[in-house]
Length: 330
Image (cartoon, rainbow, N blue to C red; front, top):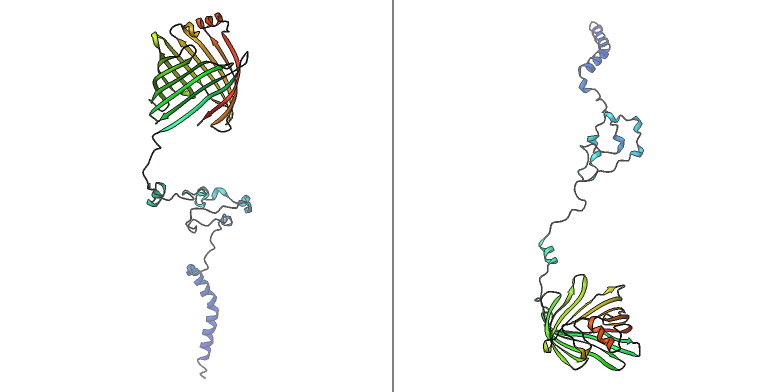
């Protein structure tokens, strides 16, 4: 061992031990980047369960915020950036179930190709209606009355048959039959022309007939016909009726008919001008649409010279009677 070098080595070790804290302190201040990084600032809304905007998933819906678990008294809401928290974006802008665009398959399913040509119904049809087929309560005895009509043909051209009459105490007091050609001039109206034959009262006579028939606004059924007979006789009738549905099967039917003549005809108790008027009110129950019994009341009154002629023959100018009957069509 070299006794001259031993003191130098011991001195070097002692200096190294003394200088070590100083070097450590020097390195701490000289290299701050190698020190422990500071903790990030505490996000006051971290416990909201709301992800940061950069970490939020790219979805259309934002999960709801549970404010019940927060202590808002310890939060400084004034220093918070609420815009970055997405409070105002809770409503999705895109529809939840967007409507898919139409395809050719969708159009083909909505508008399929027809396998056959369009065809209308048959050209010829028919309709028979007994609007009144009733028994009448008279002052002395009872009577019967009827009113019927029928048509045969197409929607445009029809042959009309109309008939009405009355019987009292077993005697036919009035009866007539009309045969008319009807031409449709609109969806609800026909113009008509033909002949009318009166069997009663008095001797039979024939008239030329012209008129219209159809459904007026508010569903009033109207028929107006003018007649021209022998020796320049003229006459006209106007009929109107309405069907008021009390229920789907119970129907109230008011009806009004006026008759006018151009000349007097004493043999038939007919005067000139407004001759007679009849107002009826019938209540029917439709067991089926084709079969409906009814009851009602009818008031008939003669006017002007016609009333005078009836009084001369010992008859009343007015008469009210109860009726009961059937309405049938097929």
